[in-house]
Length: 264
Image (cartoon, rainbow, N blue to C red):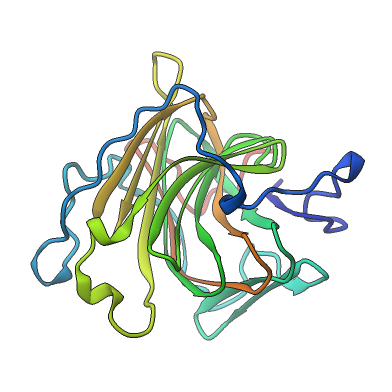
């Protein structure tokens, strides 16, 4: 079964938490103090803004899913008091209508994977918050890793724990992207998150933005990975995030064909 979540959605999304608890927005969470190893951001994009895999490209290169949002596909669409989701004109657009709310939608992977790369073009169109890819195990709301970019020129890596958003590490996008990226209206950025089960116990999470590696994190294990998708998290009401060209890759030649049905 696919996994999706948002505050107080009645069926497909995580229900209201007991005791009036709410999902916590990215901007309201202090950086985690657990065992985290975060690599310094790369100093600059390559000339002309062409992505340059630096210092290392993703390992997961076997495509198992792609969605260009020409149709609704596996995603939830609709609206309620929390926000809305729509697929039209080759993009998926999410809005959040309340302060401090987060939403995610993570369809099934075609098989359980020890290494998964999740990416999409992400545009934070309006508001204060972030959007980006997610990789998760059996239940996204219980434990997952996410990465995102914000309109205020930040990249972030975090986790979902008990339907709450937490930030592990964050950094300044202006350190890694060409200044031309910030001239004029915001534009979509390619956000790539690779999640890998590590033999030593903790898992390995790597983030690239526009092909430039910005973070390399070792944190509590989430995999093996059964779901991959997208998330948006709002500090304030009015966040609008647009996604395009969503794709998922596995890390071995034994990766399943996209035509295979998900395991029961």
